[in-house]
Image 1 (tube, rainbow over the protein chains, first blue to last red):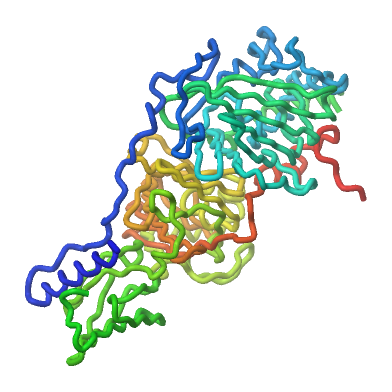
Image 2 (image 1 turned 45 degrees about the horizontal axis):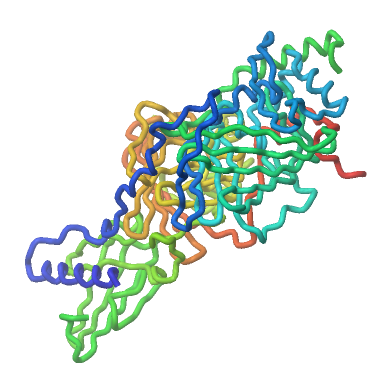
Length: 298
Length: 318
């Protein structure tokens, strides 16, 4: 109705022009311009930066108009060095320490099959640095993206949770109990994710992984057979508790669970132009080529 | 319509290009976005009143401003579909969904013939020609000659804005009150557009620019600044400098079409601002985006990234 009114007003303005008055200013273009719609919550003030630290205390959480938890914002992980090893370990030459994010098994050791434990150890050698897909600037894979030391933006448009990684990759998680996974032979770097709410927890099932990624720079092993159940639970206005249980019968003897906190950050995510600025890969390739020449690797 | 002679009933007939609208209850019901000149005839009985409208905002989205021609009549156009397009809870046009162009703009924004690596295509430049400075035109032509070697897209580098919008890959739009996000099939690239009134970053260049949007009526207007000078506009070598300013306008013209209009300003490269205009079509057959990881596919093909039989999805048996 407003539109019709607008047309009438302009028509009369034009009629006034015809009667010899000043022409009207251009009308109609900015009638319903949206102004600032209010910054979200505290915009991260008081939120913790990603990194190590004690677990955040429970408190009131934010909610969407429909009552579901509001998981939106600019976040970093408090994964405490998981990029350098999912298991707890002290600093080693060429490898920063990790406080470990393995919640199950309870001893914090991943239930690797023997071949996979050996492969993990082999990947730690300098000549294998070239084999890490992220050294080539490929996307990190559905879970690794969440504990790489880079922030991400979470949006919650109707029917979705969308995670935008500063290292230029996205995860689109439809929240739709009726959705089915892709056919088995369709395989993706980030997998195919489907979410549903269980109380205040967003539960995300991921399948259709291609198995091309590593789990971190240390070389923790994951395969195409991996399926995952992630649980995003807000525990206060600025903190999400994250747990993921991965079942990977090609690599592990039993399912395992990782967990850490995702914490609100200040500022905006920027843009990591990895491939465009990649200076490292040539060096890593040289190290690998030399090792191959010397018979250290195949 | 109060104030307009009702007896005998008036009648409006407006024509813009091939499109024609007639009605009694409003001046007209829509317009063809490709035509900026609209000729209307309003018949109050007699004499008939004929007026010509030149829509100043013809290429800048709806609802357009109207200026008055010599005949001295004006009005504001309104797409007939304003009532039929999907809307969000806040009443904004709902752009969410999977979209893709259906044109050859990726190969050349200007009307162009086929050549090696270039599919032929109708131009999308308003006014047909990009207004390069003489020096910039020389550089564009050199880019074209060496396009296979120089095109940053062939290196799998982020294509920048607006090029990412019309490469031949689908993208998905998401909308929240404070953000619009666009996720692309191509290399998992995305755009995060702030619609919260925030300002552009100061002093940081981005491959994908820095996007801040607002609504003008039913049109989403996004100003993209902070570009670097590394991206091209198409595969034909069309380019810009770091002084580029891009203003995008997204206007739904029906539930399955977004008219996408872009103004490009770059005083270092062009003699004046210029525009491109094209529709995005809803990809009705797609329920989700898949992945095209440009660099990974390239390195798997050329052997730089080697298959691991233990962890990769098994190859189909021969």
